[in-house]
Image 1 (cartoon, rainbow, N blue to C red):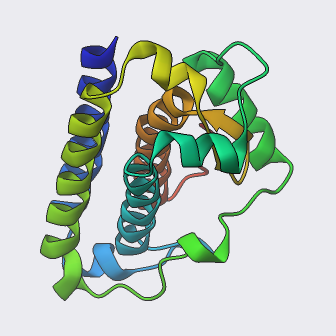
Image 2 (tube, rainbow, N blue to C red):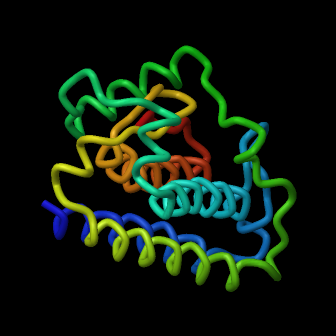
Length: 179
């Protein structure tokens, strides 16, 4: 299971990074109506992935103390997608902590490298955790509530895929489908 999740994280992050790396400077910086620019999407993904990666550095007893124990079976990939889609349809927006601010094209290369580096660190950290551990500890998710470590890690790749689809739709000038 670890290997599949790691491959999906690497693939999703790499696909998003290749997309933004190949954009013109103008397309990288241009917001799309009230939506973020590609650069802002990149910074947002980097911030959210970093939060998960840093959370995995915390001692497990601290996670248990802060967030308790799971009282349900872990959600599947499909269930995570549906729960996030419902949150978005009800108007969920990223908390300010994860807002990117203005992002200049000069930051692109460094942000792409940082995003890839954080994804790799997350994969390595996950490899050190047992399957049982991934299902036995919780982290808070702003849209989906308390989520197991496994759910948060799976959501990380789903989130990158979601923003890849959103960005492609914005660049094509069409309405974006949901996660």
